[in-house]
Image (spheres, rainbow, N blue to C red):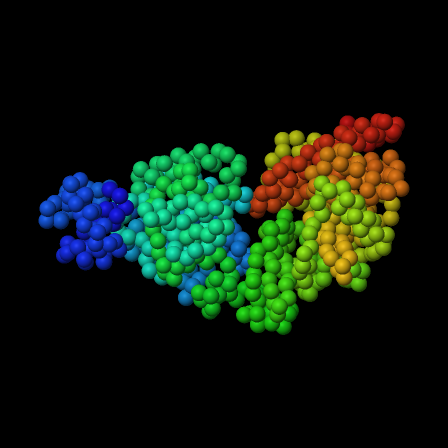
Amino acid sequence: MNKQESDILNALLLEPFINQRVLAEVSGHSLGVVNRSLKELIKAGYLNEAICPTAKAVLEYKNKTPKRAIILAAGFGMRMVPINTEMPKGLLEVNGEPLIERIIKQLHEVGIQEVYVVVGFMKEKYEYLMDEYGVELVVNPDYAAKNNLHSLRLVKEHLENAYIVPCDIWCDRNPFHRHELYSWYMVSDLVENESNVRVNRKMELVTVPENAGGNAMVGISYLIKEDADTVSNRIEELCKKPQYDGSFWEEALYNKDRMIVAARVVHSADVVEINTYEQLREIDSDSNQLKTDAIRLICKALCAKPEEVTDITVLKKGMTNRSFLFTCKDKKYIMRIPGEGTDQLINRRQEAAVYHAIADKNICDDIAYINPDNGYKITEFLEGARVCDPTDYEDVKKCMSRLRDFHALKLKVAHEFDIFGQMEFYETLWDGTPSVYKDYEKTKANVWSLKPYIDAHVGEKILTHIDAVPDNFLFVQKDRKEEIRLIDWEYAGMQDPHVDIAMFCIYSLYNKRQVDRLIAAYFTDGCDDATRIKIYCYIAACGLLWSNWCEYKRNLGVEFGEYSLRQYRYAKDYYRIVQDELKKSGESGAQENA
């Protein structure tokens, strides 16, 4: 049976045949399609001459009837800033009802009780669904690093005769049915540039060029056994390839230039995907989730009304924080919201003291608000700004000149950033969990053996940025002149300023040749051997410092991929480099680890 024949048979299984016109109205197909389909269905043995379903049709009906559903609810919902800092997207409320509860109730209405919910971010908040609605929670431990293709892999044995549903959907009408006869994927009649499929005359979903415009992808799908097996196998194949870590599960539906399932088209007003704060505000201006701390704070700090906070857009997720861009009173701002576990890592009062120390020095971005208690910060958006490219030596030289000028101010604050103390502190945050690295204790002992050399060669300690990495150097145009602003002072404190050089290197993942080139860019009059070796020591120490930091964040479900591994390698490799350099200079012995 093709799609049209299936639609017409499904209509006849639900209601007795009256005439072709009624059947056309119920099925949504033309009289011509209805007449052709009736002939084919009689010929295939699904209908008898009285246009009544046969035993063969009833069997087909039973074999393809929906049995279960999978709700995908593991992701951060990054576009839902600032709500996603307080609530997972599936629990957003529309008209007082959480999205996921509405979905589950609609599934129950058509007799589907077997419901699997794949969770990850704030998974504990979904726990009550098990008692209240009898669902089964499936935890995706990789939700932070991989997209929902990997969530669906965890439940791929349940795809047969199953609905697949994203948790951030609000459906005015129940999109589920007691009976289905074919697989489909739901799109709306709305055209949007983000979609990469469109519906053709055969009701197939075919791919379109990027930004060419297609039917908005709703994300709800239904799979019968044959297609479920294909999708399951395809998911397994794709998940083995790292390039698909960031892919949506729909990737498994494609066969060359089209999906293997038919299109189900709905009116855009009947099904709404709620991806952003403003979409939620549009559909329910009284939703409890709109009353977030972040929005209240913005309104208070900028003397604005909630409706004046518009154009909310998520920025790239930082390693410590989540930030979003917004417009208020025709001016753009960035709001920083501390990320998971940040309260353990950063003293916000010390950070506020740093901003006070640099307030009139034209060094950082323009601060509109900072809260020394919770770390919330609002800064003016620098239009047209770009970050330093660590592979562009001209960029690097300019940044080192800016850094050198900052260090020359010799600013003071009341607190110090203790590299080795912080290294130990991050380790305590593991709560007794051993390091993931087999030789951690040896590596740690080697790095600590460098401390005497560092202490012997430290000069005057001054306010040091600590996180002076390429992404924190902003190139901006002011009065037709290029300026460089240094942002994100969370870790700043009193320290040897040469630590900033080491930090730039390890964040940029520099090799030794690039490290030496950076040192030359900072020390334009040349760098003595003792200082160079000290910077190598800092690279080893800071590598282990951030490796320990990454291990703490990993325990919170936040992964940093290559960055984490490379930091540990810096600890090991630069310990050896220091030993080689000390032997060359005749200072070997005391600094070597026995």
